[in-house]
Length: 278
Ligand SMILES: [Zn+2]
Ligand SMILES: [Zn+2]
Figure 1 (cartoon, rainbow, N blue to C red):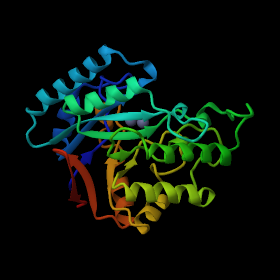
Figure 2 (cartoon, protein in one colour):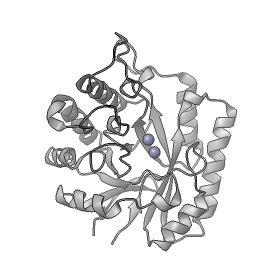
Figure 3 (cartoon, rainbow, N blue to C red):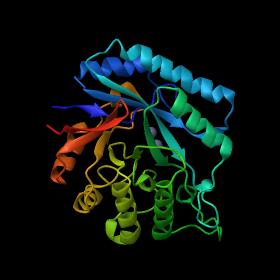
């Protein structure tokens, strides 16, 4: 069986608890073929020269340790947080020049080769409508989240993959805490069509938190993605410690097969490569 994970946080992330070496040991012990390290890049914390040095050190660490594990294809990457505050009143993405320059510098000058684009903080998680100050209902909150995901497709930096689509369900704020296709069909269709048109990868994230979906996105949405022509998927455990590296791998593999997918897509040496789900 081909085993992989394309979403991993080491202790170079504020919330990662295992080292690069610990992940690689675990990957080898489990016979994994591909592992992408994707530590957080969230400029809400501010950017400065230290920030670049931090990612340069992370790259050095990955580049030196992966030499010890020649049987595993190891990609060095980032999970870039797309903030909803970047979406201006006119609906356009507001880009901070220093932040953008930093992303571009990292992508150009380090060995980072795989980037996930993720929406984390949205007002749905904060619970109030930014315009009215009133509590949001489920339909409004999830729709707002999805509109930001749609905006994120046009992020002004390079990325390969859309991260944890359905993140708005990870923290329970509503009963029936799942993203149903039928409730947001128009927006979900636009997002899926955008991913397909831009030839991005849709990760299947097995860290569901308090979501009532089996994975992010759900099996229902994955089937729609496939039906609309989507072909690039990957497995993402969103691991924050080494023991979570293959969390729910078998379950997600089966969901992908049931939705009609035959390949995972991985990024290595600058190329997207399709590997058979076996
Ligand atoms: Zn994330
Ligand atoms: Zn993550």
